Image (cartoon, rainbow, N blue to C red; front, side):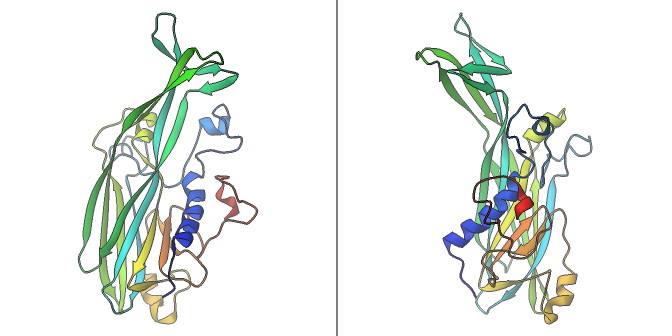
Length: 284
């Protein structure tokens, strides 16, 4: 089995980032841009009560992939990556010492806008055994951070308050035998308990750009796009829902799978012409 080192895993993350951020910021990268005021996104897992009320996306995604065990007890490490929405509120300092929320504030020649940001999150479940199902719940904490703003003269001018809602995530993994291969079934669900009253509230309780990276231990993944003849029937039996697995990492390797909210080809790469974080997956 071709080993995967830290650098190759970072390369997979780089490809995944193009998916993670696609639609979150579109050129020009300004909140005032019409495209950014009406953003759309791949891989949104909304709170369970949002979809029936037409406020948000479905709360879950699921994928199946094939693993050829190599003799030792097989296991997989699961990386779930997504964005957590963060509300950025700019507040002006008043003469009475109080703070008033404003749409924008100019401080030292720079205009600061109230808008939505995002925080990258990654949940790692190391070396889950495939001998029995796994059912894991994780809570991503919310929070509030305050950044004080001062003018060119050093006097207080206002502040930026950033707020995040907590997220409740459930990850389930099971393995079944399929013609001598292991068919892995993986489900990710947003289990936020609240009921949002609007689309804006729903998106703040959503996982944004959710995708998976799986690393095999004691086995190799099988391509579902170009399966070997002995695995073709098993590959045809795999079912996907809002998440499509492809081989990832260095060409020729088979120990990493990327489960993306868009359909990619095996071993996707970011074009050499795109060395920076362009957040535009059209060059994958």
